Image 1 (spheres, rainbow, N blue to C red):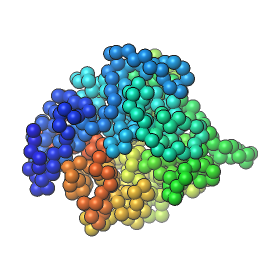
Image 2 (cartoon, rainbow, N blue to C red):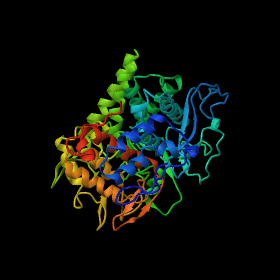
Image 3 (cartoon, rainbow, N blue to C red):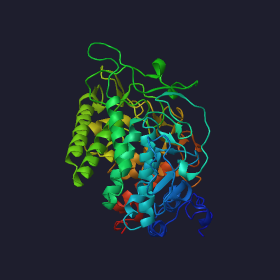
Image 4 (cartoon, one colour):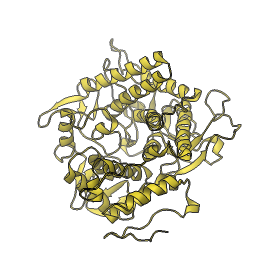
Length: 493
């Protein structure tokens, strides 16, 4: 067993469970940890990777079956008696015993590269796609889900919100409609295909889930008023009894009005689970545009040209709408991406650390990091005068958001900053801040900018996965930063 405290100056603790207590294991994971950490010069960054890279597998796979056995369980509220067929995986977010579509997709990101050589990881990710498909079919407007019925795990109790369409609290943990949740379902599928070449996820249930996604896109592209000025109630509404304004929607749960003719898609909530102010949330529209086009090419490859054309056209339409309505002129920074717009000319200028974000647009595949509008936006977002949620203190800085408050920045924002930068100094400064804010040996949700020892969530698997993605990226793209001058890249073989 590794030593309880690391060899680096911070003496970071070993934070992996005993092997008998891990929720999933793979010898390939252990091989990557050994090969990569043995080459890393910074032993504190090395210990963080040792803890973070396996964190999702070690701690958050609450239920997984590989599909080899039949499970005669009916699919609850999914319009029939179909079983939960094939591999299934229920991935919780960490200290909350529920699965977010967005979080679980990102939690698994660093493992795709191993899926072709490790059948158990292949089946785990395939199972995650299958389980997400079931969730999307059941409640496409919801963001977080209870354990699947075949798992026999008890649901987590919580107050029921006033939501339309009505949801089943035995199936759904929370029902905030977030466009990016549906985009993340598609992203998990396309990433799996890119890594393995497998189309095993293209099941009847997956196609049903895709049809459901397209229905939501159509419903949420409808404006608040039609061209004649007639009010059109939204299909989705959400109201919660709360004293926190970002936890519910205004105007009887409908949110602020959105104009017609934009071709953008509404999102009631942001990926932080905070309500949008202006419902055309640009990062989620950008992500959806990319994923629709990626899925189109997969579908085209299996011979369904009509569906592929439909998806591709939808993606192109949303992409054009982002450029037309989501780019605004800033008096200091020039043309920049707005965070949210309403189609009437109003826009919100800011960014939040949660993904998708404006800072993450190159990671999403929407723009190249050298794009002029993106570079203008990046300068704006990483400055206190340009982004109201760029939080800077004496000990820590980064992008935060309204979800936690005005004193707490998210390490994830620094990791995205490093991932989208080609500047060695910027990258290492970002990693240094993340390291100094991770004194328990894992990446926190947020860190107090005046006191890095003050944080939220000691167990937040998504942040650990993103740290692992960044380290694996640098090991290939800029190996000298991790391994020393003249070092060759580390590529998982």
